[in-house]
Amino acid sequence: MRSVIIIGPPASGKLTIAKALAKANGYFLFDNHRSIDALGTLTADQQVTPKGLCHAIRVAVLRAAAASGTPIVFTMVYGHRVDEEVMQEYTRILTTDAPPLIVQLHCAREDSRRRCGDESRCGTSKIREPDRIDGLYAKFDLESDYVSPTQEVVHLNTSKLSVEESVRSIMERA
Image 1 (cartoon, helix red, strand yellow):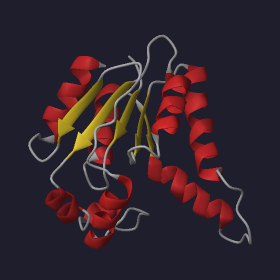
Image 2 (cartoon, one colour):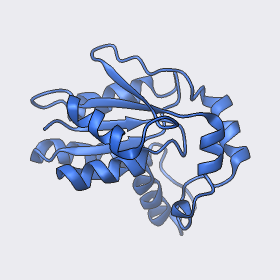
Image 3 (cartoon, rainbow, N blue to C red):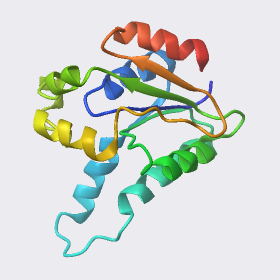
């Protein structure tokens, strides 16, 4: 079983699908907010924060999973152009016997705006304000497709597919 990287805009269903995938198939789940939350804990009483610390946390976890042969499902918001190199790095790290499956979630922006207020996002570092969602879509071109230079990317529209259908589609390819 190869690892899976799930990318997409905020409130597109990344963590919901990743949780279902991990539960059904024994993946280690590493949601991008775990690194953000860890960074908050590490820097809570600090005056300065080393640049790149959040990325370093992610790299360390991905390397540990790859080195131990633990299949991982990793989620992150993908910003078109700004995250190209990061995606290539994460793909290289997780490529052991086979490259990870990259899944890009898409949804109607209205669905993202509506979902950001869901109760499941309470008490997390996740974005909860619809206006912030709009700002991120504009700033990071969140509607553009990620194109991998080395492999196919699976695109799923979570405005049209249920969690179960999405997980089934991922497992057919993983």
